[in-house]
Length: 524
Image 1 (cartoon, rainbow, N blue to C red):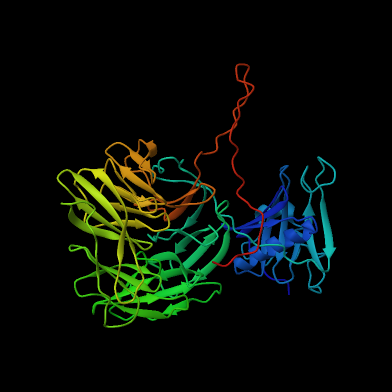
Image 2: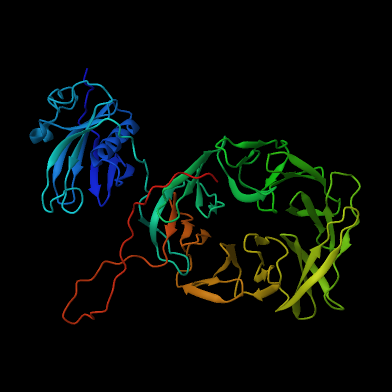
């Protein structure tokens, strides 16, 4: 029996330069037409897969060519056939029940051996036709053709709020976040990772095409990338749940005590802080190593499987290397100069402890390297730098471990370079920059304390990450769109029509293609 074909939805099948795009009620599939592939079978594959995703056995298909030709067709998802509707001249009056489709491909669409596949191939000047300007309709057969690819290409969009300083509001692509406030990250290969509920999606940074997906057994509230025991792990967490993702699709569960607090931004490994002055440090396989926290101290960094803890007022530092009640003797941070008074221990970044000291009118930032002896912690001063003023925040410290940065109020610390800079105002540390907002503008300040660029929008967005090809992966805080935007630094502009007074050397930036070359999906 021929499956019923309803009048709606209609799959739109579009021929592009070397590709076929199927739009099934907003679900877009892009199929490249490779040199060794039959365009007829690629068209059938695209339409059949689009029909399956709609949950239907058969669908109406509208074929569109670049030169404006339109073909009305029927796809049978079970047989993989795509054939012209014989009643296409009356397509506007198709029955709403979809049962009057016996004439749709009546001479060819009846049940046949599935291996014998038929598909439509329509030509368009410069695309599929061998003769330029000729558009024709063929029925071809191929016994061995297989689907070439299935790719969803996210659409471009305009950011609904001002763009970060240095970027345009034009997004090369966007992806849904469904109300999630989780910051995007970059996976080990530099691909941006978005969060949509419980789903993690790794995107091609140029096109937004999904390269891999993972599903957590909960709604994700935190996300971070770690290298644990030499292996890359994407950690996803909720209030009391933590999983790791590696090469496989299945999550690696971490046993989190019910009274534990999960910390993903507190070191080179995920950790779980417990109220009984103990911390669990997570390994690549999901196991944990317990470390005791000194009674007068707070954990400030998980460093591999060691725990760095500090008494921030006295300047005593512990590096706890084993699960033992016998703690190592603490190190006392040496003052950078006679008479300097400790303000606070700002934190530890990749094993370098940072502390703020003050004299009468100056703040000194001290940098200290820790030894790894099990019985006694050693702290060696490896650098000092003075900044103007004595105002240093003692809470709300921000750390960007990937770029070796720390921010305390209006003080930006480049831990790797052992430098510090006073900022023109408090801001946010993100994507390797300090983003300072004044009453009239946003400043993007680099690790050297230099303002690279500004924008006159006081409420400009701040990117989560910046890709290697320069895209700012940005959320619109406070917007109802629920999207993540991949912003380009310069938006495409329409090409101007030359006029007699136009300069013959003027150029225009072209709009990027919304599709991409297909490559195998990768693992995080």
